[in-house]
Length: 80
Length: 80
Length: 140
Length: 140
Image (tube, rainbow over the protein chains, first blue to last red):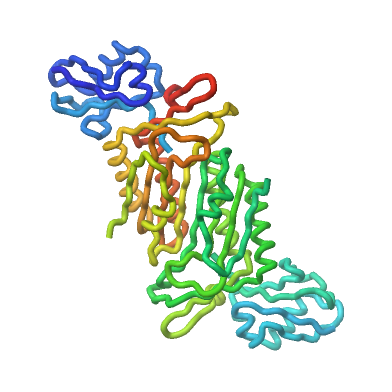
């Protein structure tokens, strides 16, 4: 399946886009997505941390991604 | 010496005046003033506490009162 | 530059004015405490409150609190204002504003100021109920 | 009656408006945190800041913080507003207002909200210096 990862903050700079198309196997988990992202963008591994939000909620590593999900990469937040 | 005790809050109600003239021996201490006040106004002893301010500062019991001092009775405060 | 603003007023307090005094570009965190008149005390409806102050000493004690706060905490500016006279439920009796580079000190200093004010500043509050009035905290 | 106000705005925040939302006659203690842009970070002058948010999720996370605060502390109302876009030193990025019958819970809940907001709400801040820009907190 192809999904599009929406990126904010420094993740947008690393991807050089705010909407990154990415090809994943069906039933990929958040963890598998992270591995694929880090393979393509080694800079990600240098961040203090980052999370994946699925449908506007922080997603644990074992959550499975469906084609219609809204998937967003959340680099370290710094609001306030 | 005669001094005038300025009273606020419930002390004013107990004295029935905001400016109570009181006759004290020369070189009386704050403690002696308190004893004289409690003798005349037993209601004072029922308060949670009260303090004497001399010249706009809280005065310890052993402070000596001079005729020109500004002496004020401070019942329990409740600002804020 | 003056870092302490202390006032006792018989008219309404202005948070906007106090915030403007405290705000500066070195202060990233500002903590504010606003003390308002509640409409009840121990489930008894409150009609109004009357505040009176021994003004010169209250000003001195508030200045002492602000000076202590500036020495104990890493804060930049502080404003403490207290209203006196008759106040109705919902009206504001006290506002404390503290500005600091970082938020931890702003929170702690503001808390220190209101806690100490309630213990040491010669200001008295009389609560009026439908069936009478009491000087708050006077008796054990 | 609605007890939570959550907003993300691209224009200036209004403490007055948030205070009006939170104030009611049952709340004797109101605690406010104002987060302003500082003119320096580690002694380096800051020219401006840019905030961006993943708005729908940031709103959800802020609502979650407010709901948690209402369940953990004895508070009545809470308003959390965050600004996004370009901000200059001295301008306000976030305001949290918490109203409670008694001050202890207002202070603690307000502190909980700002501490948690800084950890969980998807909002990012880029600091611009004379010689470049960095995403705050991105790297260890």
